[in-house]
Length: 160
Length: 160
Image (cartoon, rainbow over all chains, first blue to last red; front, side, top):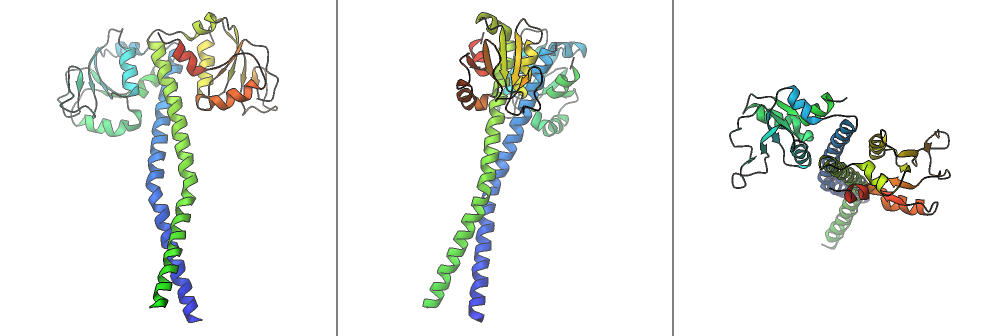
C-alpha cells in the first residue's frame, strides 16, 4: 500500500514537471508572436489614421510649415519612415537625414545615418516607429535638444 | 535492479506525457496569435501600399471610372472598408451597399446588408478584408455574376 502510494506521488511529480516544462518552452514563442501581433496592429492603425487624415483633406506638409520646421530628420527607415519621406518628396520641407539603428557606420552615406552619429543640424526629429516611440524618445533626448515628435502626433494633431 | 529500471521507465513516461500535454495546451494559443499577427501585417501592408499609391499621385476614383463601375458594393465594414467609403465619399461613384458577415438581419438598414441578403443591383463588389479574400470570393461567386475585385488589386493596378 505504501509502495503504490509512493509510486503514484513520483509519477504525478514527473508528470507535473513535464507539463510545466513543456508549457514553458512555448511561452517565449507565444510572447514573441503576441509582441509582433501588437506591433503590426500599431502600424496598421497609424496607416489607417494617416489614410483617414488624407481623405478628410489633411496635408502633412502643412504641419511642418505651421511650426516652421523647414529641415527635419526622419527617425526610422521602415514602412512609416519611407512613406513620410515620399509624402515630403515634392514639398518645401528638407529631409536632412534618415536615422535608423540598423544603419551601421559602414552603411552610412549621405542622408542615411546610424544612431551613434552626431545629429545633424535640423529643426526637429520625427519618430516613425510608433510602437517604440517612448524608448527612442528617451534615447534621443540624451543626444539633442531639438523637438522630438511622434508621427502619430502629427496625424492626430492635423485631423481636419 | 529490475524494480528501479521499472520505476525509471514509469517516471520518464509520466514526464513525457506531461511535457507533451503542457505544450499542446499552448499550441492553440500560439496559432491564434500567429494568425492575428499575419492578418494585422496583411492589413498594414495594404495601407502602406495605399499610402504609397496616393503619394505617387494615384486616385482610386479613376479606377472605377476607367472600368465604368459607377455603382459599387463594398464588402467588409472594417478598417479598409471604411477608408474606401471615405475615399469615394466626394466622388461620382455611388456606394449602393456595404456588405459584412457581422451585419445580421436585425442590424440591416439602408446601405448596410448581411451576407444572406440578396445582392443589390451594382456594377461590381470590392472585397476589402484582404486576408480573407479567397474565402469571400468563393462565397460571393455562388451568389452573383458581377465582378468581384480585391481592393489590393485596385491599389496595385493603379500604381503610377
